[in-house]
Image: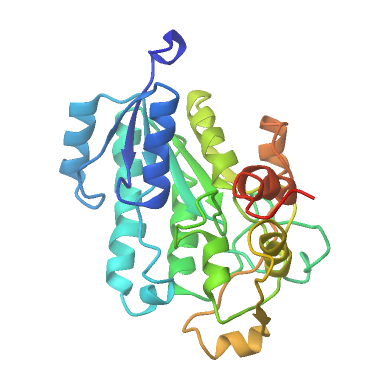
Length: 295
């Protein structure tokens, strides 16, 4: 184990989740001592027991309900959504504060939508201090509430993740995998999070004890069609897709979806090596998975 990492011990919630699983793998690769929490987030005593047993230096929360197969689930399971995403997250933040621990909380940036002050295509993104303006889905509504409350906890680092993407193209949670399997897709530029690049940065943020709200996306935006064009170029030259409008999409989903650009200036200032979204997609996702011959 590297002597520089001897000092760290991470307690991670969300073992069975996508981000939680990746965090464990990253800790192993970096020789960071870590353990998964077994307590339920909404059960304060179980969290206190986890902390007493693990004696962590930092806590990571990658637990929560996003809904299966998607956020529409939350519309008909409101109490379960509140229990985990609101009560659970606040309980964990409160226990961590009592124990003097920084909590890295993987949150969402799907609490904004393009508006007159941040028009689509303008390059003007929402900043960390902007007030959420999208509560179209119950999922987003609970996430906006809890972000506002957590902002009062000086020990919490809130990471606004959006449309997460990883190099694992077989994972059904991967935004790329999702849109390649849809019958039809909308085509709207959005901020997105390349996990292969950003999850290691979140570990570094813990080591630096950074707190507060962070737009946790790569700089810039990319549209559905731009991603699918890259997919066709690098993975499957015969791939085709059909577009439809937001109005047409609304007929096949229960809750509206968030589309926005987040301003990643704050994250880029702390981590100047952070790649723009399209560069990150090519470097971390499409080049490693390339199936087509190199021209």
